[in-house]
Image (cartoon, rainbow, N blue to C red; front, side):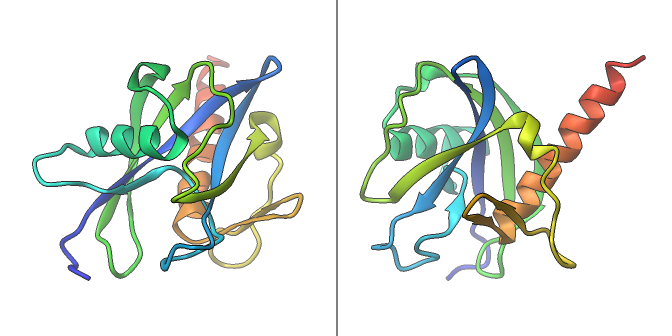
Length: 161
């Protein structure tokens, strides 16, 4: 694979019965790259496409939603990707009226974790790796999640002043 490839992902924030959750995908077992892994929606940035445009396009394709359902999008960070991909832009965004839909071509299923539970997740090992119930979150997704948790903690700390 071309080492000049770059990608972007969206960390989707959803409302589940009045509680803020973060949505994850489990990659389809039919995929050749990382089948069954937990991830955020996203993918390779196309020619002439901005990182945000790629994150929005991939999120809408993978979750079967309309672009108008993704609001309050902001860039969280740029994180080094796996060896076959360069930097990955990480965005945050809220999904409106999301009904747990997804494209079976790329996604095996989706699950969510309440935001307040994220703050209690403990990373295992030297590299970030999280477990929530029976879900394992590792690799790039764990690094992006760790950055999001850091962001939440910074936001709540700044609210104190």
